Amino acid sequence: MKKWQFWLGVLISILFLWLALRGLHLGDFWSVVAKANYWWILPGVAVYFIAVWARAWRWHYLLGPIKKISTAKMFPITTIGYMGNNIYPARAGEVLRAVILKRKEGVPVSASLATIIVERIFDGVVMLAFVFVNLPELAKLTGSSGFVGNIQQVAIYGTAAFIGALIVFLLAAMFPVFTAKVGEWFIQHLLPERFREKISGIMHKFLGGLASLRSPFNVLMVFLTSVVIWLLETAKYWFVMHAFNFEVSFFALILMNGIVNLATTIPSAPGYIGTFDAPGIAVLTAYGVDQATAAGYTLTLHVALWLPITLVGAWFLAREGIKWSDSLRTEAE
Image 1 (cartoon, rainbow, N blue to C red):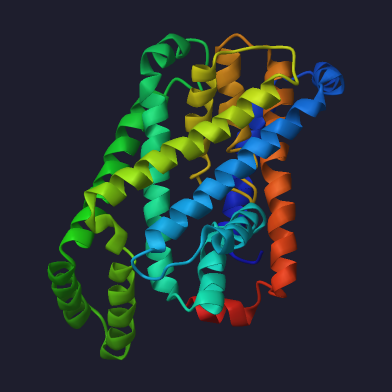
Image 2: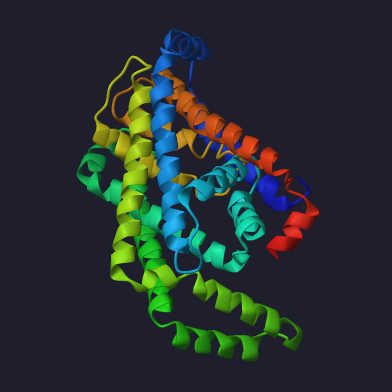
């Protein structure tokens, strides 16, 4: 909490919360929340954990060339990682699950992180695809919500960034020897001698983590799995919507899912406070949902996405007897 990055994230979250809740009448908000039928959250949570299982399968698939580890073993580690993302700043859960995988299965942290970064790139590509599928609909919304109005430009720049990163990773995976030579040149010419051996070792392990991308079939499988994961998560949005007195199309929820998850890449307080809520409320109000209902739904959805996976991940972490301590951080270095 002493680091400036933490407090910057808090300030960003406060800004986004202000954008989300300005003009909201609390009486109307509490009335919406009080009348909601929260039983609809249960099937939403069930569908979400199917998506988490699919995430564990995707990670198992990406790690296949390094070590064959069953999805059943990957699932607890995956939940711990998402719990870590929810309660620690700077997505520390990604490093946490890489470290736990090293402890349990002996997979180098740098190789695990390579697969995790690949996951995030594919997630970003799918999120942007969700936005682009709905661009004609989005064009109709831009006049209704100034917050949503810039998403088309963001989508274009974001697509260029994610596609560019994906191409770089694919090329590095397909030409590992050449990539290693280029990396070694930079290491030998730009880094102090005392760091060269360690960084070189990390680089080679990292490249090993990209081995699954050498097969076009594997790339297609990871992409299709990513699409399924995010469609399942959108299904949770759909179930939770039925707890409230409004209805928008599944495509509208796909658009909301894409926008809010792209927004959560912005640094914020742990749990994506504000960066999830403001764009979600903006999308729904642009679709004609009144602000109190949009706020009640979005904040409830946020809790329903945050709480179950955090509790399950914390339970698995406690079962492992592991704490996010200095010794654990040392393993991640």
